[in-house]
Length: 228
Image 1 (cartoon, helix red, strand yellow):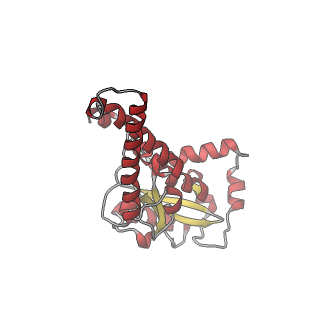
Image 2 (cartoon, helix red, strand yellow; image 1 turned 90 degrees about the vertical axis):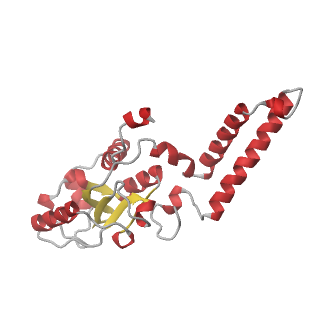
Image 3 (tube, helix red, strand yellow; image 1 turned 30 degrees about the horizontal axis):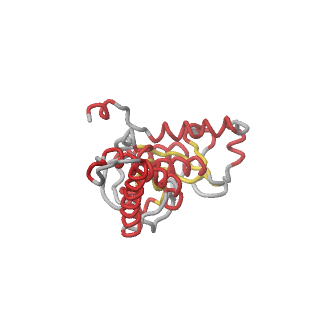
């Protein structure tokens, strides 16, 4: 536990910035002028482009990637169960004053539980700019657990889950004394025990998944219906 406390927590805004930088190095880098040209200025939230902060502009693909990695949701603010803090209201007011507009159609990126319960994890507040670009209005709350990305890795897809169950089954087999099952342990006995552990753990995972209506990260990141 002490070692975990020493690990730096995960700042979602920093993760988004790294994801955006990675996307730009793998593709032709857009200048700020090209980025502005890509926006649909006739849609929601009429910004004064001369006052925009380019580092706060993110594409939906970058938001989706981070949501899938960390098992987060990106939903309309009406589904958010927590109240906006005063700092968020102040950030909205500052942007509206600087840009001479009224912001609308807010989106929140946060762990699934914040759309069901009142918690203080790491929400980010966005508004759409058109053409699948979003402007980061404010970030507040606590940063995410440093191991959240690793802990959410099994839920990215069925293959990750299968590899996790195989690995956990192997650990359980290694920790179980073979002498409890046979007086003459051999390779065949080991694999029989491993297969038994795999079936038991897989059954628990399947029951948990079906009973609670769980789904994989790509299916829930922007869904208001699926459970977490």
